[in-house]
Length: 349
Figure 1: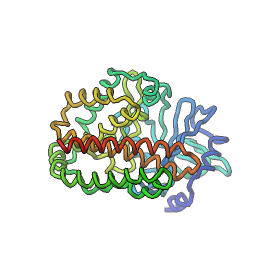
Figure 2 (figure 1 turned 120 degrees about the vertical axis):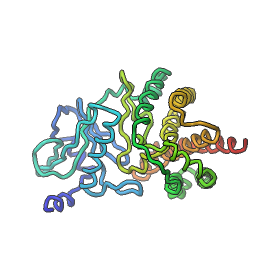
Figure 3 (figure 1 turned 135 degrees about the vertical axis):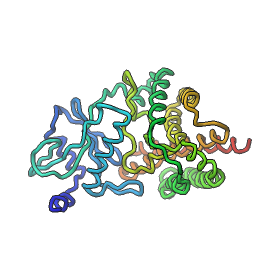
Figure 4 (figure 1 turned 180 degrees about the vertical axis):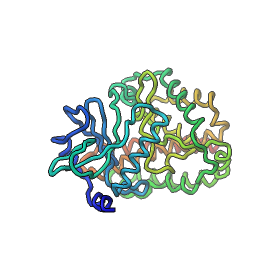
């Protein structure tokens, strides 16, 4: 109890992270540590290793507010990602402090936090970077699909799908409507309002279909964050960084899972690769069986564009001086609108 009470009073901030990078100690070779930051984590790249520290934050979809929570979700991240990768996630290590210095994975000082320890992968093989260079082909797509089919066919099944919870998730972007209108203009506020109406109608009209898909085994414990930045194209694709912070975002319809990947490919202008992936995956593991289920696939693509827009809005809100995040949010909102129009055309047929 004394350890827990002491630990709960200690929380790292950005100044501490900078201190760690500038003069900290690491349990591995780390000659020039490099910081990458997301809206929920600080990621420190060393020579051959990576350390990922969760930010002490609390959103509506995750809670990293206490050291105990952060330790638990570090452990979950390692456990869950080992389903798809082997030898990449090396374990959970302590972050400690001795006077004015910080350390990761060493025995110095008192423990103040925790980090996921990973093997560093070659940046030049990260799929999103390869997509921008036109260096991803059909064989890469087939290899990713084969790996996902094996994973999806074996992972835990859930018979029920929470359609009310899904509606809350897809409409969560509404809380940022005022900010979007202020920063991007009224037309983007309109896009959000129109999408909210479409989401509500679509899920209400297709409630029975979603429930049937759960009963048919299509709701599984998936990856949950399946996009190209989370894939390295090595000799065998390495698919990592699944959702650990909230199982509801991972226990989803398989169409929802692959819709994220296809939306991501299309966001790079690679619609043909997205079509190749869907056709190959669905031929070998049929999960999209008719036109109504294809409409659901398009709905999920719109939802996933919605998610990426929201992530970039959160980044923009936390970093008011970085307009790039607003630009990315606008790009995904435009993509979301395109899917909503496609969905409307399907519904009219």
